[in-house]
Image (cartoon, rainbow, N blue to C red):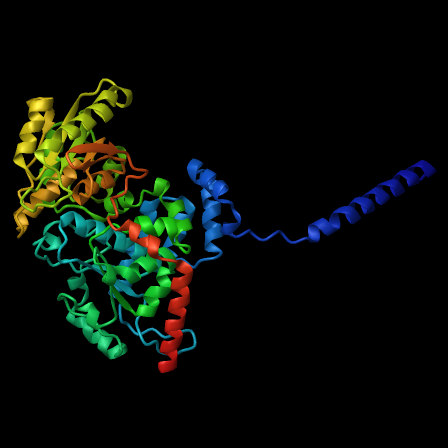
Amino acid sequence: MNANTILRFLLVIALCSFFFSLFLPLLLLKAPPVPPMVALSTKEQAIILKHRKPDQIKLLLERYRTEHTLPVYFDRYFKTLNLNDLFEDYAYYHDKHRRDYCKLKKTADGKKPTYPSPGILVFRPWESSGLANVMIGLTSSFLLSLLSGRLFFINWQGHYYCNIHAKNLFTQPHPYFNWWYEDFITTDLIGRCQENYPSFKIPPIHDNSQREYYGNLEVTHRKRESDYMFELLKCLNVTEEFDRFGPLVEITSNQFFLSLFIQYNPYHDHLLNIMFKEQDMFGPLARFLFHPIPSIQEKIDKFIVNHNIYVSDQIKESERMYSSTKNLRNHNGDVIMYGIQIRRNENEKQIDWFRESHEPYFWDACKKELIDRHDIYFHGKPYRIMVISDNSTTIENARKVFGKDMVLHYDEQNLSFSRDSESIKNALIDAWLYSYSQGFIVSKHSTFGNLGHGRASIKPFIVYHQKEKCMWFKPATSEPEFHWYGRHRDINCRNVISRLKKERENEKKKN
């Protein structure tokens, strides 16, 4: 071996040693921890949510999960970002735990728990709610159950303003999601609970039952009764608060209260804004939850097919997955339908409802906002106008303005105060047909109109009046209106948390 070869060998060894000493400290460094979600500026998060690239959305979800505990059925959703996967896995979770409820389970340390798990959330309609109010309150309550890991049931037996049992309107949402409370509380279940968890009392089916057991939470127009729920929605952790109430919580509501929840709640707003594009919560939830029974769905299908109505992809996907009939699964209608809903009901004399003199503003809004732009969005396709109202003269006036053959109508909502079952069924058909529209003109403060554009996930044009004149506007989201939304302005979260902390400390001292 000559001198040059030895020198080259030594040079290579020296260079390797140099680079090894240079990069070894870098290799030993730990990867920086994933920064908490709050480290992102509002602007940065808004950009990610606007473009919604799957990898970035998944990153936001994983960062959220490092700080919050979520139920196990969120696992697949975090990988696929498909809400239908989340709903389906919740249905399987619900079925598994519903069947095994109150079977004896011991904790990790071998002790017997006081109550069975998971917890239960029961929705009961507020007694002065019409059909649409019940449905939007139920939808809101279901999301709280989904986030908190509770089994969701409905105790909808029929009441004065909606005098029909829910089983006469809807099927269960999914084959594995039996949400009927009366099917859950069987004699066998009650006996098993009494044997294994004697401290756990299951309320029977009758009005105000849960008030006497664990707690009833209310979101209605009644301020005093609803104050705590407003504080919960704006300021508190839903899972922790429900656990404090006990194994069974009942919610009574006639409002879609999720708009307050998604905008302000510090524990859940990040997750909800990631899950629901443009804060569209009601549409995906309602399309999963509500499926008319076959006898009602058949009438809806027949109307859609006979008039060759176009059905959007997202509605068609819902029909394909969950509908009780198969008529619309291969339907390819060509006629674009626009919807006008005018709330008259002059029998009830509400100051914010509309009169015949206001109707021209609805016709004008439809012409300017929908018909004049029809060719931009649906070039070459025919259109019709679906008019729904609780007053027969409104339908006749629409036919005079747009032409008899241009106006579609199923049946006027001929509802008396008693709201008999057949009237409720026809109202549901009306609302479902209306939701197939591709543009909406609705009356302000009318949850019936909200139901249609909310299910369709389409932002409406909302008409409101000041005495004899009307104006209209397009809201930021397609969500149903939360009538008592402004009440949250009186709530200071720091004060709420401080007050509740003191109250609960005093409770502990007493006990």
